[in-house]
Figure (tube, rainbow, N blue to C red):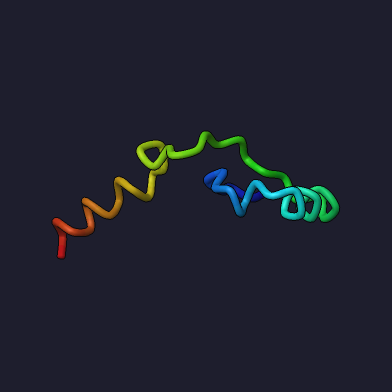
Length: 50
């Protein structure tokens, strides 16, 4: 399963065709949704701990 940010290079036809040909599922994810990514919240917590 793949999650990408819908950036232009990731959304290119050749990338989409490759993922479909290899039967790699892609998680629907809106562009520019950093606040929805759990890892973005982890960095702040790690910063406080270090």
